[in-house]
Image (cartoon, rainbow, N blue to C red; front, side):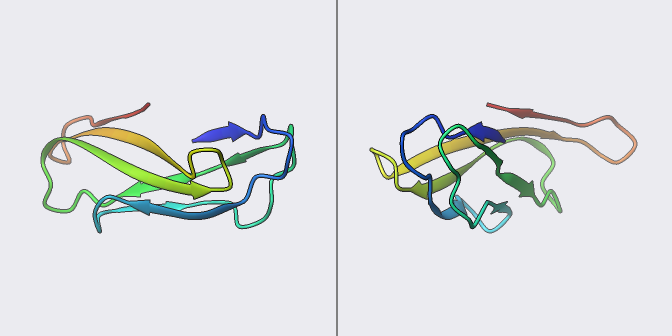
Length: 88
């Protein structure tokens, strides 16, 4: 997930936590200056999870509502079939 700090102060992300142990997020640990961008990488462990899944990550930062939620959707198929991942 790519984003831009559209605020007037440095953006400080303090936590990014998936809604389950199979979803892990990696986020910028340094302050992001106004106008600058960053990226949050989300990994979903599909082991033993066939079918459609919707996972969320809760981002905690120095923003007005303190927490922002982002989602990923995945349709997990056997290895010999094509899989799709959609960002929201």
